[in-house]
Image 1 (cartoon, rainbow, N blue to C red):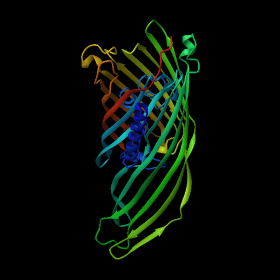
Image 2: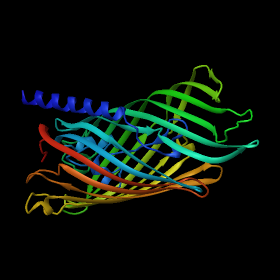
Image 3: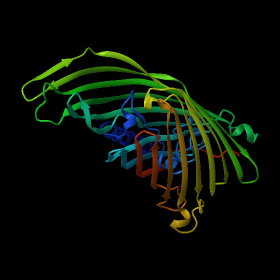
Image 4: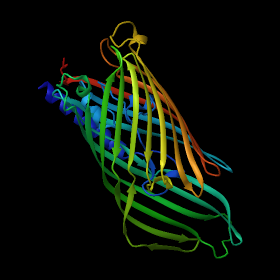
Amino acid sequence: MNCLSLTCKGFIFLLLVIGEVNAQNLGNSIYGFQGWGDHIDSGTPEQEQAGNIHGAYRSSFSPNYHNPASLSYLSLTNYNVGVRGVYEEQRYKSGYVPSYNAYASNASLAFPINKIGGACLGFRPFSSGGIEGTSNDIAIGDQLANYRFLGNGGVSRFFGGLGIAPFAASRDSFWQSFSIGYYASYLFGQIRRSESLLFSGTDTSGYFHSAIVQSANYRGALHQLGWQQSFRLHKRIHVDAGFSYQLPSFLFSVRESYSITNNANSQQLVTADTLDFRDPVSGSWSGGLGIGLGEKWKFWLDYGRRGKGSDQYAISSRRYALGLLLWPGPDGRGGIISRSQYRLGATYTENEAIIGTSVVSSFSLRGGIGLSARKLRPPMFFLGFEYLRRGGTGLVNQTFYAVNIGISINEKWFVRRRID
C-alpha cells in the first residue's frame, strides 16, 4: 500500500508540473526566431548548479538527464523538480529591451531496479520560441516604419530512460562499475510568430500597416545512448568517465501562415496554404571526466559538440564546462552548514558562423547550495544562481540573471542493496 501511495504521488506530481510547463512562455531571445527556436538544455537543480555537466556526472540520489548510463548508480527513489526565474536584457545599438520570465525547468521520477539498473521518467523544455523586439525608423520609400517581431510558445519533451550495469555482480571492480544506458524522448509543442511593419505617419500615402503571422505545431522523437565507468586511484579517491551521444533526428512541423494589411479605411487578410516541414535536430555528443574523494568533494571537466541544426542558425557548436561539489558532512554529522552541499560551475559555448562570418559565443557562471532537512539524508532544497552573456560582433548581445529553485526528495520505494 505504501508503494502504491508513493507511485500515485509521483505520477500525479509529474502530471501537474507537465501541464504547468507546457503552458508557459520560456524566454525572450532573438535567437529563438528561426526553426524550432532557442535550444534549452536544462538539467536537474543539482546538475545546473555544478555547470550542467553532461558526460561523467552521476549521483546515488538524483538522475543525470544528459547521460542515461548514470541511472544504474541510483540507490533511492527520487522525485525531482526545478523552477527557474530569469531577468534578461537584449542590447541593440539603439538601446536595450528588458524582460522577465519564470518556468518549471524539470520534473522527473527516477528509481533503482534490482541490483543492476535504474530508470527515469520525466519532462523538461526542449526549446523556446519566445521573442519580442522592435527596430525603429526604417526608411521605406518616403515613409518611416517600425519593424516589430513577436514570438511565443516552444517545444517540450517527455522522456524515459534505462541504465544498467550488466557486470554489477562481478568481483572485478573495473567491470563492476561499467554501465550503459538509453534515453528516448517525445517532442511536442507549438510556436507562433509574427513580423509587422508599422508606419508612424498619419498620412500613409498609399503605404499599409502589414503583418505576417505563422503558427507551427511540432512533433518528433530523440534517441540518446550513454556509457559511464569508474576507476579507483586510491582507497577513497575515484575517477569517473562518461560519454553520451544523441542521434540526429527531425522535428516534423505543420505550419499555417497568413498576412494582414490594413490602414484606417480597409483591411485585407490573405491566407496561405498549410505546409509540412522537417526541421533537422542535429546529432551531438558529450564526454568528460570527474575526480572525487568519496562524497566529500568532486570535480568535473566536460566537452561536447553539436552539429548543424535549424536552431540559432547554427552550423555547429562546441561546449566546455567544469563543475565543483563540496559536501563537508556526507555522514550527517555536524550542523546544517556541514550537512549542506555547495556547488560551483562555469560553461563556455561557441557557435560557428551563425550569421555570415559572425560567431555567437556564450559564457555562464553558476553556483548554489543544497540544504538537508534531516540528518543522514541527502539535500532536499536547492537554491542556485546563474549569470550568462551571449552575443557576437555586430549581433544582439544578451545578458541573463537567473535564480534556480529545486526540490529533490528521496524515498525508500526501491532501494539498491549494496554489493560486496
